[in-house]
Length: 149
Image (cartoon, rainbow, N blue to C red):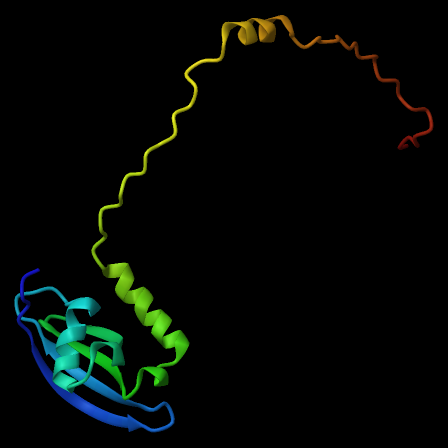
C-alpha cells in the first residue's frame, strides 16, 4: 500500500483519571485524498502520541465539509488491561470491517452421485399415490337460525 501523506495537529488533550486514559482531539489534514480509514490513521496517531498501536482507540472521525480536513477523537491508554472489554471489541470490529478481504481458500466440494440405479427409478414410477375422489354434498340451510324481519 502506498504511503499516505497527512499532517496531524494535536488539539485538545484531557486526562481522564477515572477511565485511566488520555482523551485527545486532533485535526488531520489529508489534502487531495479521501478521508483516511481507521487502519490508515492508527499507526500515524500512535507515532504522534508516542505510544503503541494497541493502546490507541480511535473513537470518532468527523469530516469537515468542504475541506480536506477531519477531526478525530482518540483515546490513549497506558496499559492494555485498562481498555474496557466492550471498547476493545468495538474498535476491533470497526477496523476489521474496513480491512481489505483476503481471498478465501477454495475447499473441494464433495461429489454427489450422478444418478440412482435404474431399478430404483422404475420402482418409484410404479408406486403412484392413489387419489380418492370425494364428492361434495350440497349444503342444507339450517332451520335453527333466526331470520330478520
